Image (tube, rainbow, N blue to C red; front, top):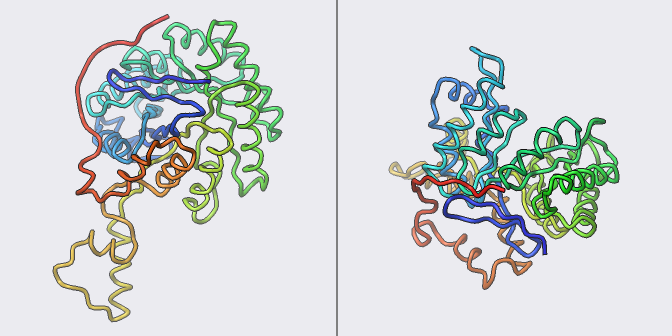
Length: 351
């Protein structure tokens, strides 16, 4: 049975067909987050710290680390990204003890991340493009790490799932030429937006089954891609993830955290309640108000997608005796604080 092992200094995450679904937290990524990008360029890592702690508390078993900031002061990522990647990884490892996923399109940043990461991180990513294969696969072999393989090549991203399967097969075969086993290849079959392609869900489920049955590889995806551009994206994601798990998908790169209710939304809801003539106790705090009117929470917490994943783990017998489901549904006071910090050194084993 295929098992992809990812490690920190003290913890192990296993991707496998008979393992609990692996949640790879995506929040430490400045892409599309102008505030975070500006903070990182200024040397401010406070948001990174909050995101690391919140994602682990919400149930992430691996954290993706992306340092892809285009500095205003220096637009060359080959110079700026490697030291930033190293800094973020070292800082995150001082806060949480889950394994990491080193995520970059810059080869120098990938190697800097591999040098800094403790244990056995996941590398993100390689594609079927010839130049990328020749750059990334030697790093995978040198550091003896698993790698995410994205099913596009020099021709781009095909809408034909058969073409995407062949690209994945090519990457697995090329990896074998470097002595990299199939169990260390985690294929991303590329989930298309359902709003742009009505068969996108059916395609990916069929493709995941083929990847499992014919190539014997574990799989991952950017989970929110399927709902892009549509209303109530969480509702779509909540349905997609258990269905993908049922098809054989073993991990996803996603946001496990339901973001807290902001002051603007809170003020709007209070005004709406007041307009209806509802009189609230003067001493009611914002958290109680949110709970009472179904807004969510003023604090980061596990999102609905995590609820769907945990329920699916239970239903597929990947949560023995329902321990995780029971713990997840306890009140915070009963369950105790999640996450945890530690500090340590150490290096991964090399080939």
